[in-house]
Amino acid sequence: MKCPTDSATLVMSERAGVEIDYCPECRGVWLDRGELDKILERAEAEVSRSAARPPGPTHDEQSRTRPAYDDRDRRSEGSSGYRGKKKEHWLGELFG
Image 1: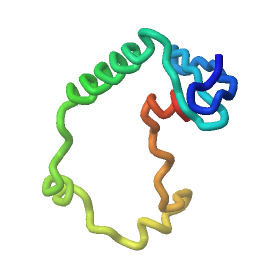
Image 2: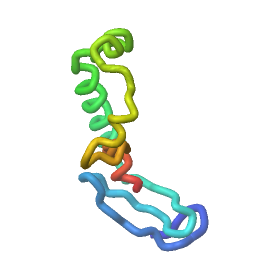
Image 3: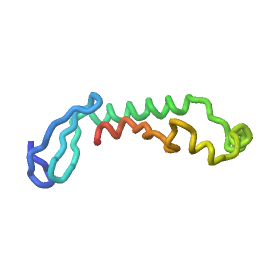
Image 4: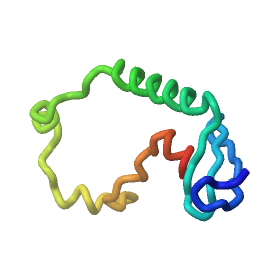
């Protein structure tokens, strides 16, 4: 199949159970019939899962329970003081 934008040959790939056709030249993405519906259903399910979680403590509650920042915390043994990599959204794996 040819890219409608630049006539390059499209490459088919399956990501997270969704088949996508993409152009290696212009990086355009095309979906077959029903594939967008699959993506939207998964997104809705993820939003409903995250909405079902109870809300976390407010900023005021956190500041009351957490000790004040101290430089000694950064020098603790085995800790670099940096956070780990943030978990990516599943849509990132589709187009990443």
